[in-house]
Length: 430
Ligand code: ARG
Image 1 (cartoon, helix red, strand yellow):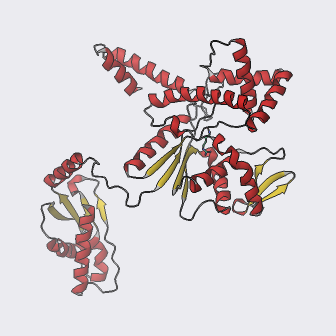
Image 2 (image 1 turned 180 degrees about the horizontal axis):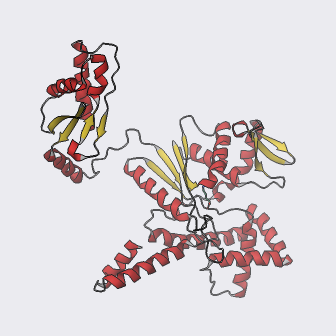
């Protein structure tokens, strides 16, 4: 409707020009506003005021000239001049009702699909293995899934990328601890509390030298593709993701096992990637490490910012993985657009990884890389939200508490709800 009114008014301005009421070279921007107060109709324009100068007439006089030129239709019931020369448009109720009806009857709710569908990679949720999802993961998970659904609805090809933290040196220690647990208690492995598992593994690593040596050995073995270590690693990933899937299902999140594209996927690409960065004169050796210097991230004295892509000991970093992952998403998945939903603390990291990927030519022109940033969940003290004893708050506990509180409220108010409906209301309120 707004567009229709816009077209009518633009046409009237053209007519005025033809009749030499407005100088030919005058540029007039027709603007339509949604009215705040429906007493003033549905839409309004200040066009008459804009034309006062070029037409050398009073706005009210111009407004009535305009109103006289507006064709009568079924859609607009009334056009009114208000105040110093505003023109208010009243849209017919029948027209609005018929539009709503048409939208409701349309399978696609009257929403046009994208003229040029894109391939969009949405990097979201992305929890870490052998840790439970924490409260802050709810944001990336829920915002990301909402965007996924919207873009799919608009007809884009959406690739869900659950970039889980499933690789790194901590896995040596975790494998050694899993092995210890299995040996002690072969039949039933109690892993419901992953946080405790991680904590205990760390304790062993720090206090038991023999354990630490074994753990370090497992890191090397895992990285070289040792079958036993891979099997143990896979177990840890599975246990974690089965638990996370329960949370996804509970929150009606569309992620499944098939959407896991964790850090480990990029591991085999890291060595050739750094070699490529060296060949392209981007990465240079500095004190044994491989570093890319970024001019666009220079400090206030103009010194470029150094980003390590390979450590002195040969190990790769979170940044190296994100560069490889950007390359893979562009080259292999054919992404036109990548949106990464992670909290604002990761902003600089993402910007630097993407800058390096662009400099290396991994990102074709026109590909959009976006950080869907959001803030942190803070406690009353303004610091990241923690449990009373300083630990991270598990998302599972938060959801449980929400349900408990909702159940209490409902018990106070609607005691006569049938059982199944009650359950449903509790979940919805929670
Ligand atoms: N695993 C990370 C975390 O829990 C989030 C990963 C975000 N995605 C990325 N491509 N870096 O904080």
